[in-house]
Length: 95
Image (cartoon, rainbow, N blue to C red):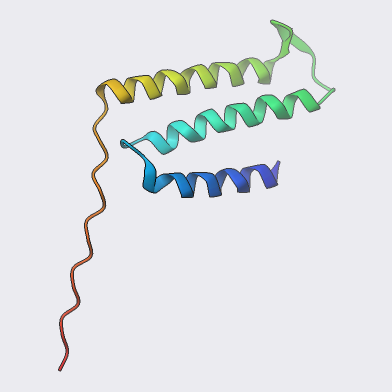
C-alpha cells in the first residue's frame, strides 16, 4: 500500500503542470485512490460482503469514483481555467 501511494504522489506531481483547471489534481487523486482502495479490498479476505456483492470499503470506493467523475464534469463545465504560473522576475545585474 505504501508503494502504491508513493507512486500516486509521483503521478500527481507529474500531472500538476498539465492540469487544465484549478482542482483537477484533487479530482485525479480522488479517482486514483478510489481505484487503489477497491483493488486493495479485493485482495483482503477478512471483510464481509455488505451490498452488491462488495465489501463496505468497495462500495465507498465506487461512490468516491462517481464523485470524482461528477467533480470532473462540473469543473469542465463551470470551473475556472488554471492560469499559468507567473514567470520569475529577472535578477538585477550586479556590477
